[in-house]
Length: 96
Image (cartoon, rainbow, N blue to C red; front, side):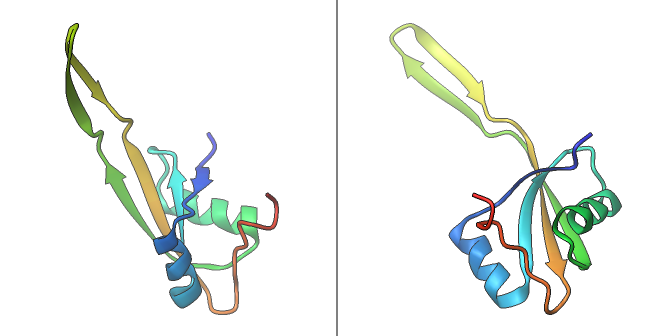
């Protein structure tokens, strides 16, 4: 089971990383905070101070088309916000 799926690279998370040393990740929904902490420390070589997680449910949408009503939904997602110790940084752009 891979714990980290991908980093969240948005304007808001970039500002958080510059100001507070916080980084966001999309993680496996079955992963707990301890597994997330160990995965970030092993992957990026930083010391993790705190991990906060959020579960987002699917967004449901209904469209009215010529052929009838179409129902759809997005996938549910688990996000993790990781606080890193002072002096440690994670550079997502170095290996693009």
